[in-house]
Length: 402
Ligand code: DP6
Image (cartoon, rainbow, N blue to C red; front, top):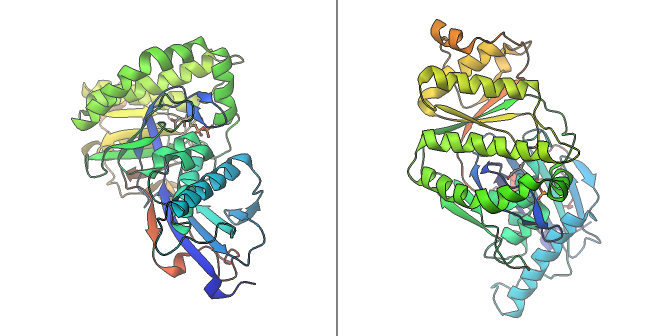
């Protein structure tokens, strides 16, 4: 068992991000280089975050990792790629004489423990927050500075966008070695304070086709995907960045919905086809379009990733009415009091006119619960030693707190 002094531990948190211009398809599987650039919104860590502790000690005999309290195989290729990459950067820093005090011995093994405060693989981008947090925490413990896009990206492509707060683009880059395939902040988290995000959890089960395998099949079989990546995304990226800069919600909403629909169209164009949306997802889409029609302009937008859960963007003045509308169409079954998590929302009635425009039969329990959140900051270091998920012996503490 290592003595306290020989163990160096760092704990950090990282956010989830939701793409409004989607990444789907790789041009290099090994380096995880995308076929197109993508753009995302970083969500607030008060509601959704990964917490990771990394500890190094000369007394550890091997690298080990625990996810949500369970030990996992440290030999997973993507995890190994992140570890190799961070050690390469640490070695480079040492060789150039940077690093004061001297960087820890690179032969020291690392123990990593990571927990999410939300369901893993529920289509809530847990791998993005997880690998961003891993990259950020390893960088702190190995004293690596500078851009960590490559480290996070080697874990999961979308993870590089969780390295920054606010609005983030992942530039696809052109180089074969991926050095220019990096994440950059488009606007900080303070830029659009009225923007709100509602996650409508439709199913908390694991997804049937993971993103990695799904996008491989799409690249092999979908001509629509190739056309989207080459001919449509470049202009869409520029337009989306403009909408964000100008806080143009109606146009932002329209583009977000169109891009989500185009991504799911490429999934249907994949052979054999992939479908991530279910009947509830499609009802939510209908609800959003009718809600917007009732108001005469775009007040709400949906987007869906590789699963049936909806992520809704809206502005603070619309949240209460929209949540009431979701409650009307999807009346909570048993957990009425736990239906809404996260930011508080004032209960309001749904007008008869809105009900008439919706013209939708209630489906009890269709939406399990809603998480109300907003735009948030990038990864953070937790200074409190009590936050460490690993004890002085380098093993997970008995009770893991997110
Ligand atoms: C639909 O980043 O999970 O959420 O790079 O293979 O790990 P890998 O895939 P991943 O794909 C995310 C796909 C998406 C769209 C997006 O977040 O841009």
